[in-house]
Length: 190
Image 1 (cartoon, rainbow, N blue to C red):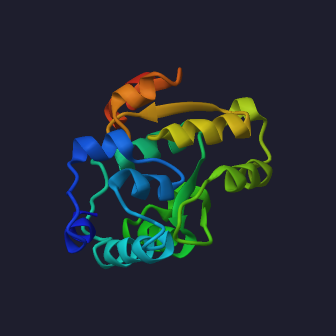
Image 2: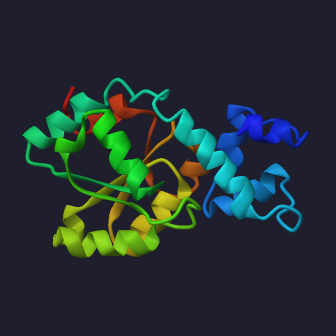
């Protein structure tokens, strides 16, 4: 994002500030960054970010505990799905790249790059899973994940090392874990 901000001679953003202001719909995040969407439509600056993101998509690494936690949960009979605000094609590509596709029964992303909301897809996922809501748990890292889980009628655990700061998550009333290691301890997998 900072390269896009610099190109427009706008103030760059720190990780701490990002975690304070990022949210859904992503269009609001751009407004909070100072973009004037009257002068430059979100579809232009948003697509520019996506193009940069796609060029560098393999630079990010999975958190070290991801593969192990997925295996341990799978071994005790817990299935996994991904509900993402990423475009479906990019989501499929990244899950394949990280070689974790075999852990998931459903991968559901968006049909566009503008990350408006995951709620509609969350409701679709509930139908596809065909499980009682008390058998489903969402693990996310944003207030939007919590909102989506509420709309789906399911419980939600939040990780505070992701998109949102611990402070933003704790006020929601959801169970908040610092990281995947803490989540593993909760499930008594460590």
